[in-house]
Image (cartoon, rainbow, N blue to C red; front, top):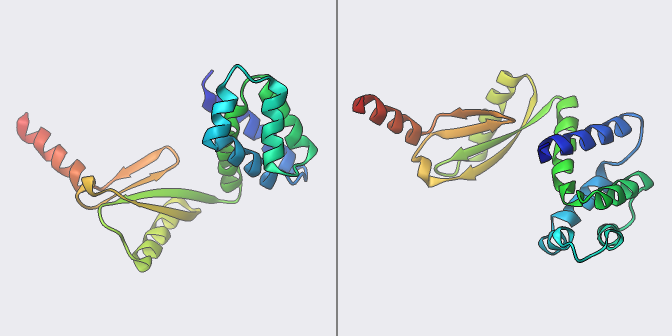
Length: 173
């Protein structure tokens, strides 16, 4: 089973707990941030440290966390899956965004775009998706021009690089 499926199962369980009134979101984000740290990730992957040490490192570094999250960290450490905490948090955030009719869009552009253009793009994507869109804009000069938008598993590629590659293939055949 892939790590994405495993993470999605844990995230779904956490989401159900949140739906029942538990306030776990901040605690899960804290332990995920600790587990994402390079030094902690190396400790979690190391077979030389006992499970109890791995769980305690995460819990101590995260500070005060609720009982549910503490038990989750301990269980994941016992199963050798504590390194999945950042992925579980990402999946949980995606479930929460989906329930709130929000979506994150990852936009790649060749040159930086101003705030007005970002606002127009967010509004256009919101009209297309029917959800509130949060943009994350990255620059990549290798696309030459245009933009690439990723929303979930969808990719909309309006880059000049892709258009030129398509023309090159058409001319070659």
